[in-house]
Length: 289
Length: 334
Image 1 (tube, chains in turn cyan, red):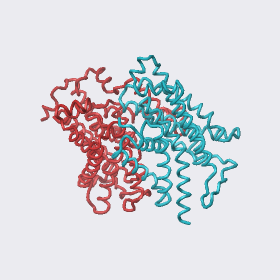
Image 2 (cartoon, chains in turn red, orange):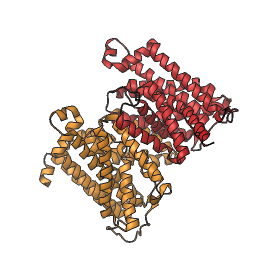
Image 3 (tube, helix red, strand yellow):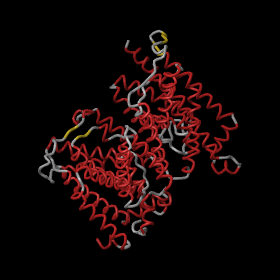
Image 4 (spheres, chains in turn brown, red):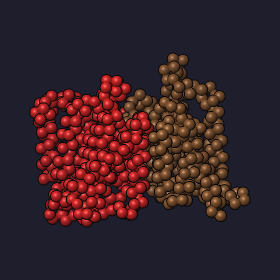
């Protein structure tokens, strides 16, 4: 009996962790290429979550159907943000970029507060309470769908960066800024595209997370921090690292919530982050800078 | 010493400084209760910004977790006062020691293991969040239900126990701000100050010149943490209530560093100018929005965010360097 509880919780944490991983993948892609830490990452996710709720309430569109359209909307938002205000900051010091993105985050959180109010919201789908049973293991169907879609999107992104000419061009910018300039790559446009792609990841993750958690405007900063923990644990700039970090943090939080008290669960994530920063600062799968 | 400290400053700058100080000393006699609280907030942010600036502005180490030092200082002094009856000025020593030790521990771990830049910044957030959730679960400090000091009797000012009217707190905070300013001025012109600036500009070059970068980065963290803890003691005795959700929250760390960054990082007047601008802006916006009937929750912060954006876009080095050039006092302070 006891063992099956642990197994159930672990599997549930792992599935949630894959969705976290997709969200963190966005942060990792942005940092890996643009070298800007997106301090408005969680806030961008809450934008996607609210849009998913609006689509569900107004048109009855399932959040899983909205994954692709919302990724598109967030892509446009991210592209505009990078092209409009972040590009002039690429060569500025970190604290300057930090303030810029904190300001963006502040604006997003409070616009959401004005439009949607402070109450927690969620969606109830027809399959909210469905589950799959495999012997003693009972898995929440929603989490299985969300984790599956996350893995699919991550795989598509891997393929894009590996095989598509545009993906290769973006990697070239990340590897060698000057070299990319020399061969005639339009770095500013590629940076904007990259920020868009990172935002699209977080948009897709937000569309799915709305099925798993309630959203409030204040959720943003907590998820920005969560995304940091994940990418640093996995390796900032490493794509497989983000997914691995997501799964690890998902597992840690789920098990800490079970073994101790749920309110202390993020302490364990922060503890893990501190250990990783001290003993393997480049992250589990990161390359030494 | 005073003459030494003042040398190199243009007369115009000194006159301006004297004028500002005179205005601040006289202000509470002219200001109403409301304005007085606003002024206390401004001075609080000017002082904490100055403390943070030692680490980031002087030595180039970005900390995004300074709320932790405020919180540790606040809890240390409050606990000593409530449980053992030890007054805040003695408690302050404990607060400085505890915050300094924590700063040293974080600095030691980070600098020994070569954690720098963005990673160091995120490490400081991690420790602050760790402290926040930790304090939420410690019964002795009241946990998430908060820790309270006995409410002050406003009729009598007891400076030794920091119990009294806002007027008294104003002068205490003004004293702290002036002391912080002088300390930073002396630090910046000391040998260590020049080492810090060398580390900030190019750490490798500094080390190759024989500067013990580890030691001086540690000094910056410890001094900054100790100074910030004093603000925490003030916070505890001024507000009389402490909640981990509030004192340790990352948004406290962020609001603490906005002032010096907007004002001008690495400058002595930057944190002060930034605190006046941001707190003033925030209060004016509140009134303006109310006048236009737009004071819905969140509206103020949206405009505040837009103003931040505009300032960082227009004045990348902060307001003070720009203002100093306009006033003809640039070069007054490094």
